[in-house]
Image (cartoon, rainbow, N blue to C red):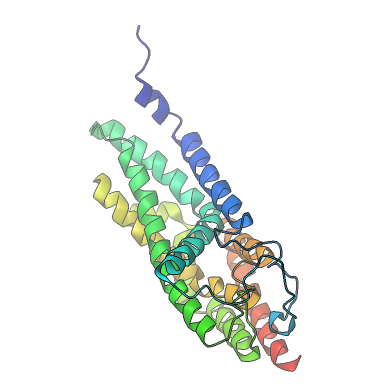
Length: 277
């Protein structure tokens, strides 16, 4: 009796392969961030623990630029890539349940249909999901440019240096955490089985569009939270890690929705405190 074909044996380990791929992608993204995300800056030196970053002094750090890099086409590409890789590092862990479930559902579907194209749709689903975050990263970079050019954020530390900007972003994030739109998007992210059942589409193009749709709900759930990086610092490792953990808790833990609402109340209180210090 001959052994099963290599492809068939690999498909039997779909969950392990998918999990390994997501883990490697996430680790590479975090390593890139820790290395400065290609900016030539020291991410550790750009990390502070201040609750009110706009009040923190901006110490001179050797080797760090004191002004924006001129926003050349190369600088735009670099910052778009920086934002996208940060989004991958922060969002990949919380997207893993949907990716694992999709891999398993797709394996069963292809086993019945015998399409001969077993691996492509899994990658297409992930590509669709990541493409939405790429679009978000382009928008975030435009906002980054506007805030930098108006002096509302520091060119060196990439965080708020204006009380009213900090207040507005914290308040907006807190209010959005309590909004109906946030709840709807979070419900889709917390229930990947229900999402796939309702929106399943066949073939690689369908997998890509399904990934785009799931990514859209994910962006709808977290886009304002990601804006908090403009307060604490776009390359502030503490803020990046804290937001990644909050997003993961919201989407993966049973009490995640309540944790998210509690975070919303805390952010509103934090915004008010920002006006008083």
